[in-house]
Length: 402
Ligand SMILES: Cc1ncc(COP(=O)(O)O)c(C=O)c1O
Image 1 (tube, rainbow, N blue to C red):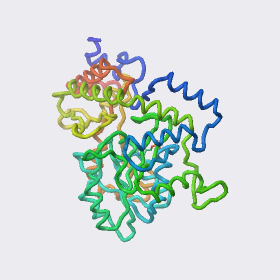
Image 2 (cartoon, rainbow, N blue to C red):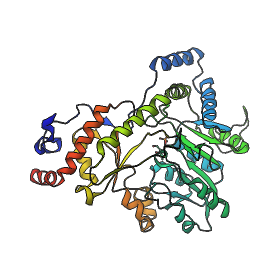
Image 3 (cartoon, helix red, strand yellow):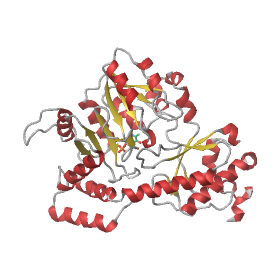
Image 4 (cartoon, rainbow, N blue to C red):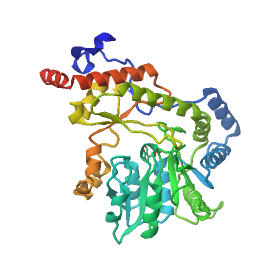
């Protein structure tokens, strides 16, 4: 492997990739396979595959217990969950949301013909900058959709104060934040409702899936009906609803994954510490930190690249690592406001999003989870260090090959 650390042996300059198999960000954690297969057999024996089956009911109870919330409604994915939640709370007109988020946060609003109004982020937290929310409020604003980016909670106290002051509704996209806490309280208890994602790439995985949690009895009832076409009883439709139901096989996977979360957290945390140790002292590369006094799932290993200090851009590092089969991701490049339909609808949105525009050029999401080894991480970090130390030579090599 020594030879890898000569410029000409980098894969981007024609060398052999450091990894024969691709290392993905968000490679699923599988949990106990036997337990999963046992559950699938039970499900097949019962012939109850969907429509609020026993696994979904059990899974909902387990989540509600863990989060310490009154109601949990399992859904087919977080995007549909968000669509249901924003409709159920009565969002309309305009809703303030960060642009630095996965596109589903904005789409869930736009899909309901609610206009997402993009707010800038705090560069220290990557979350919505609560000091900039007020200036985005107009007479049409009905709410705020906060996003707990990387599972690090928004400043929910400040958002709560703003929501109360301006009579706005508050919902959270908690897609990243299952198992995380804010001031000791589990995410899932804030705002009118919160929406988790259990997509295969997430900390808790039900293949596809999600959950809406709330402490509001009436809202919970409404959300449950909306998730099942608006049916309140066998023949009684009382709301406009959709099909947001979670299937039994997804709940089976979700429960199996839930049994494994302590192990996943331990692995994620260990990986984070390995990255921290191995990246220490590389100029221009910093890592987001988690508040160790809170509960964290440590699912996201997020680097920020300062091109001036590193002497190489984030995008050049992406090219170097991709060639080595390390498929790092530029989440959430280029920002929702730079994607359609928002780019055309709001061509000048970027003027009010300077921190978002800066951050999308710098962020790098690294492989984590149970599918990566300490040795893999050490090698990835060595590659990063080597690339930073040889930024100029890499650039020259690339130019010469063009
Ligand atoms: C912040 C955020 N919101 C929403 C979603 C959508 O989740 P799902 O894939 O479960 O629909 C994601 C998924 O990646 C996300 O990262």
